[in-house]
Image (tube, rainbow, N blue to C red; front, side, top):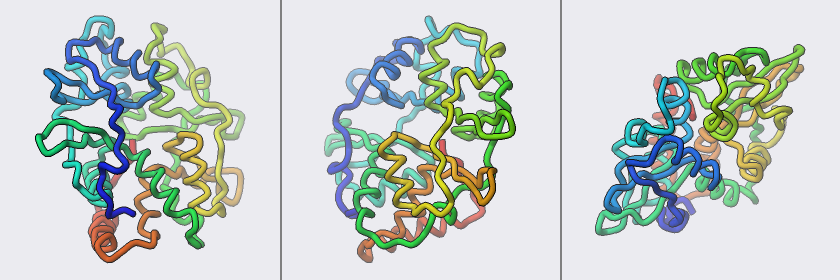
Length: 286
């Protein structure tokens, strides 16, 4: 239930690194451990966090010597967190309003005891929604316009677009159809550790080819389950014709979670989040 404590779903296996570690060392650690973030600690206390988004926005579009530059130069600080007794729905609200993908969890002594991610929330939503009879389809909750680039566009230009528009993925078109998807995870695993000049590499060489595409008539629950099973944060959605109607993202979990059969305390919290969602402020997931 979303009113349970965050300590019940957090992970205690938090991967850490020292502030003096180089960008290359921390990036390699993320790739080796297959994670999207590393907590940077100093004297056993969290000093910052380095994520896939930081790789995209603070490393790939700058001229840095990743073999010598310490991670403290590009990490996100201060790192955000919540007490371990915080309810899951409150944590989700904090993540949404603050645009956080990860939050540290602190014990009574303010020491880090774990970390909670949007992926963990996604798992919970899928599990709770298994037996729901929700008639909504993914076409009803899908995000708006689909950011698209041609397959021949150099990687550096694609990264500039993602940074400029503050988006976590783009669709890649080729031959008049969708050829692939290029995400922050692709940046981390396919180019961040490469020494090639990415201004000479077409995005088609490093994209994820032939991505799974949901139809607009697919139930939301089924799409979220597919995202969880495959580790996706984004999934393209087809329209009535051959063109894409949009991309469903982890942010759509927030929309969907309002349909869960939850008690009045949670409904009240979701009402506040819904008002924020429907305000003029825009939220673009990373």
